[in-house]
Length: 191
Image (cartoon, rainbow, N blue to C red):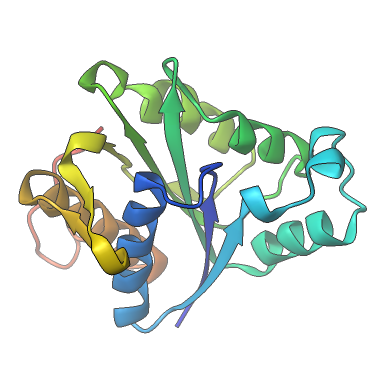
């Protein structure tokens, strides 16, 4: 059993990005892991913007990452870049904040033109924080996510199947299993 921190960086309480993160968190919990949510929009704005890592709420969020074995990072995509709330939070982290951790990057956005944000914008910043591994991430097109009444999340199969696959690779990496060594077919790298 691992402790997995999930970073929610959507500024909105009702968010398709958070819907995808909730779906991933359920998969992690079903696999027997403890999920610790870090919701960036709930952090105090002034200390966050000023990079005050000594603020108690900010310090708790950073401590949650430090205590985790693995991290799922989710972000909405705006103007071909990951969200500013995430950027602000990542900027205040210590240089090696993700050392020894497995990381799964996930993004949502309104157009397929932004699919490369995961690998060309987010992955290099995460890599600079020294994780042991960044597993293949995924970009989910907002049109593939429906927020139903009562809070139910519906992700169509076009997006849900690859999202389950990248989550499975992440879980295998967290568990220290190699799919190739276990005799499974290697998975094709995705966004």
